[in-house]
Image (cartoon, rainbow, N blue to C red; front, side, top):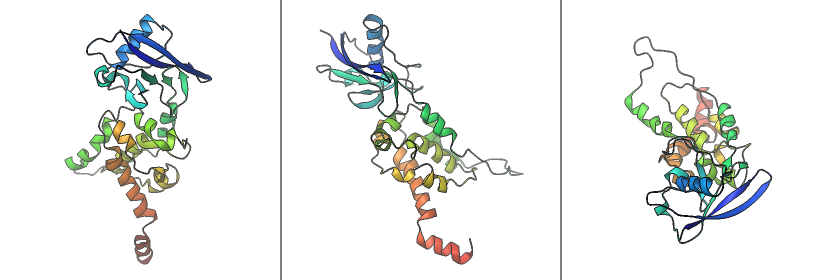
Length: 245
C-alpha cells in the first residue's frame, strides 16, 4: 500500500487539493515523491526546484502546514499513516500548483540602501578585524528560500507587504548595518520604510530557517534596538540637544 498525498492544484484564479497515492522508497525526500507523482500520475504538475541539495532555496512549500524545503524534508520524518498535505507558500501569489511568485522579495531588496564603504585607509586599506567579519558571516548563509517570509504572520496573515520588508530583508539589512566598513545609517528607514517595528519577535522565522540563521536574536532584535536608541531614547535626545548634535 502506498502513501497518500494531497497536493494543491490550481493557479492564480483558484484551485483545489487533489489526492494521489504512491509508493515511497527508503531514503526518499518529499521532492522525490513529487517527482514520482509528476512522472507517473500528473505530468502537468508544476513545481520549482534546482539543486536538490538544500542550497538553492527553490523548492520551498508548505508540508502539513509547515514551511519547509521539499528536498530537505525526509519522508521518514513524516507520519505516512495519514494523508500528507503539500501546498504552495501562502504569503506569496500562486502562479500554478506548487509554484509561487516570489518577485516581491527581490523588488523590495532593491529598494534597500546599499553598502557604502568608508574611504580606503592609506595603510590598512579596507582591512577589518576577524571578529567583525564573523559577526556578519552568519547572515551570508541565507539561500533566499523565503521560508522565513512565509512563516512571518505580518506578511502571511496581515498582508503588510507595502509596510514591512520581512525577516529575510531584515537579515540583509543587518549584514549591511553591522559591517565594519559600512558608513550608512539606516535607522530612519528601518523605522519608517522597512517596518521593523511590526516584528513582535515570535521567532517563527528562526524556527523554519534551513540554514540555522538566528534571525530574530542576531539580526532583528539588534536592528530594533538601534531604532529605539536613535528615535525613542529620551535621554540620548536630551544629551544630543545639550551638545548640539
